[in-house]
Length: 271
Length: 271
Image (cartoon, rainbow over the protein chains, first blue to last red):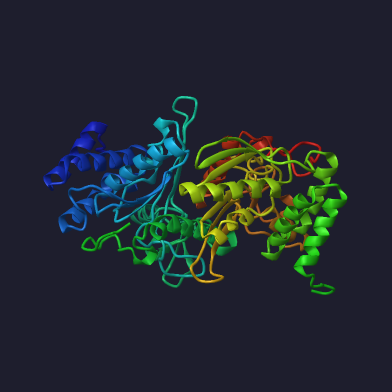
């Protein structure tokens, strides 16, 4: 690419961390966010890396995301826990929950932790991958701002509700990592086609009338994995619901269409 | 339908149970199978009900499925267990594992049980739904005989590897039940189109050359949920792999293409 420039990972991390520290975010929280965003970029999820920094900045500036504090365990058993993220940065809450799940998995064989009061936490895969160095399987889910229209509907209801599973390999650098939205594609792919003035495949998105469209300019909502009904889009709808059950419904946080839109930084995300 | 006849559930159950008892299957095992198959039919999964009885009969006749005995717990923690199904009927092993998972969930908050040495267990939803009366969430997975070709391949590798989640509702008859193959559709839908001499939608299946086909006569393998690559079939491929990890890889049973074909009743299924 013309004028492209390679930037070392550590430089990128420091850049993000310093932005947050300037906003008076606790240095460890700033470090957590930087590590998650750079990992997203490094793995090629450019929609979940540095390009999202504006969202995190605005949330901090508006006070809907807190600069300091700790997530709190509200209730727990030997293998499960319910956590209040206290409106801290998503990566702070995500790491807290996954570390707790790993501890419980080591003690009980499996650990399952749900949170409320969290924020956008970057790539789901970051958290499932935390289990790998412990030679454990890791899973991670989150609900998100509405973008996905369920089968036979035409308005966004669910977020892109990702599912992630990481499984350690006995060989080096051969771990399995699944990290996928339960929509056909991420919104970023539609936006990219729009900027490039390209068509999108039928089955990615619907227009305001609920019809599938190949014109990204007519985008109104994403379709669930599977696309239209005759290619089993209702299965992606079912999987998005599964994620919603594991997240907002178990956690008692904002559910499906009640989650704020991306741009509503004055409202707590409460993921 | 012409000449169709309504048969009471109990009559169907007794019919299946008596077939198994005639084959010297333990009466309780026969009852388990009958209950699972009739539940499949009753919920409209006709591919997983009475029409599969021949498979179970042949497995029993060949001795690859055992008539009597008990599954055995090989290893356990407070929240997990590894079970050897001892080649018993799938519903016997499935019920044993789910009852164990429910017991552990009540004690530890979550229970996760994997099995090897099992057989075709009918609809996955039967087992996840067992959790509902305990007001628990239930999940169930199984691998199966190869039918699904991974993205960029043309040979069947995975089974239709279903994912099931059941979640209890506080309202009566309003529980959530997801029970879906991770292929676009079940093979039965392709077979049905073939019998009716109808076309199938592009994206359900591929022919011997790995191209998508709308002619069920040219069927060679199912595509994963999402269909071809440009509509994100690799996500269905990822989900089928997730199921394989949760089943054969964790359980130590026959994996993916090493699972026998449907008709090879002389080989133990070892699911």
